[in-house]
Image (cartoon, rainbow, N blue to C red; front, side):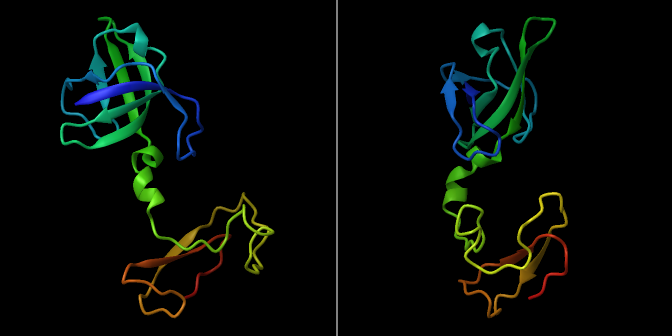
Length: 159
């Protein structure tokens, strides 16, 4: 597998990260069986990687993922790179190509183009419920994909 180290200056909830490469692409041989979602890499010491907080790993199967990482040294002078996958960057093409219908958005209208008795939304309310809508529901039209209705601020969702 291969890896490239970066400095990431973007918040974790940003889809397109502002990353700067701080290393060339290197070949990495895993020390042992490692997780694809939270890999731990042990590398020979290289001061170029110490400041990295982000890494892109291309696995032997050709799949490439982005990870947040922390770099530490062990007693033997090796680097221990602990990673956690960044799902937004790792799956950004799929996210951008996802067919969805957005009816409420904080950036459109005042704050929404649809009347909503639940506005303003209070951020301290955490009761979120989702139900699967039947494909034959008159509320949705689709090509047979499963539809979901998300209800916030408590209450009971209805079809």
